[in-house]
Amino acid sequence: RYKIRAGLYTNWYDYEQITGNSKEIPNVDVDIWYWHVNSPGPGGEQSPEHSDYRQFGPFSGPAAIKQFAIRMKTCDVDNNWISIRP
Image (cartoon, rainbow, N blue to C red):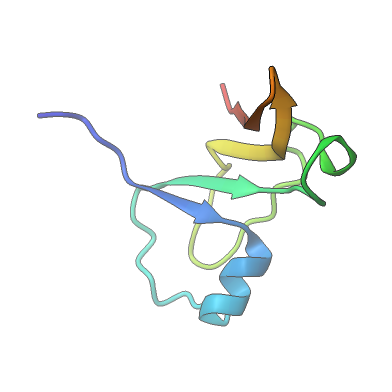
């Protein structure tokens, strides 16, 4: 009725550390939102392209969203930057 989709926010490394790269979680239809950031601010920003995505666990297919920068200042407000796969 509301068309709300579930998602999972993680990356291959965190998923492996938390679950041991478990494949026990059913490969349900969820959107993967992964992050790839080296550090907060402009020095840690990565490319918005999704070419660095690594599949993990039982999840297959491309990631829907990538967070590629955190705590980027805009008008004195901290922002996180994401890119959405078309």
